[in-house]
Length: 156
Image (cartoon, rainbow, N blue to C red):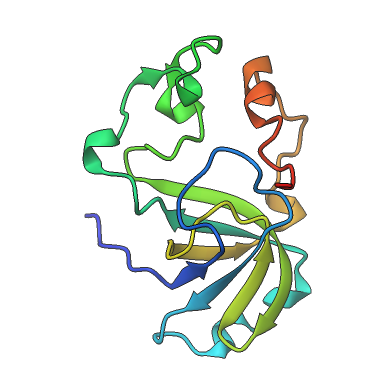
């Protein structure tokens, strides 16, 4: 049985719409919904990073990809399945980012380099623990490094 998922908070950020690159250095706030008190964030500032799971809420159902495509529609890169890329047009529209914790103010968590836009529903926040990171070297294809080359650069 699949139960519905409710947003635990919403992103407050300067970007109103998704862009492919230049997410570096941006600070965002995750404001918890009224369902939660500041107690829900107690201890999160003891961690350097959190993983934020969120909904790509601006993706229309007609734009969802379930098969293979060229990342960013760039034919220089191979067509790969939607689960072999981190595109926003995914079947369940769920995004995930690891962000640096900046500070906590009541029921607001401020993070750095969250690649989600203003108004994005947040589904979950998890502390990043070394024990949950890969225990061996990470491998990825060359095209993915090229795709990410400017992703975390600071927009000038």
